[in-house]
Length: 219
Image (cartoon, rainbow, N blue to C red; front, side, top):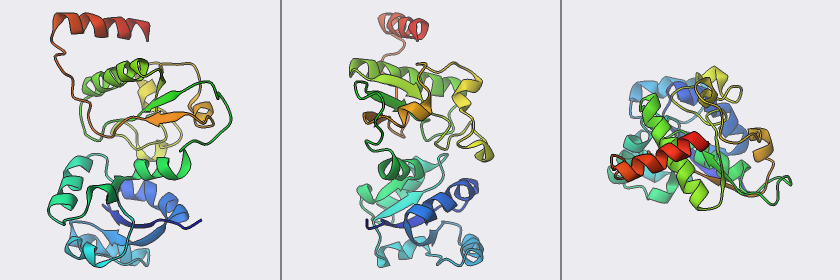
């Protein structure tokens, strides 16, 4: 199977936790970062450093943004300032999902799971709580079983050395269903939430508040 060609954008702390996995699965064309001083990181790993303005000169399938904290801002910069098409700019976990978890496994063939990821922003805990709540509502309306994964995918609340080991959502709340994440990922019917913050609409409305309170109590 042909491996996708990728440029890694962002050589900060999340780069360190993601790069070995990316390089084991994909063909890395080079590294890029808005801080040209980070060229030394590329040299240490014997990789090509590509200044952002030169990215279009190279043949690649995707640009992977490693930072969850500034994903939206970086993506807009790459699309608008560097003139790269939207479909080619992805997050690390987006591509990880496409490569690994798209319809694999034989368990729970009669169940449909909606995996809720942390939104790619450094929002406070209860902003993320509202985000998860709205995704739970969306999943239930579409007939999916919602489950929160702040374990396998980078997020603001999980130290990089705990990635894949602990679910930071469960530092504060129980998960929504009793089925373990490992079992979910060995099931064929999986849908993932968006990286972007799910903006609430009319959440101050009294009827809306009562509606969401009911979901909170039940799940």
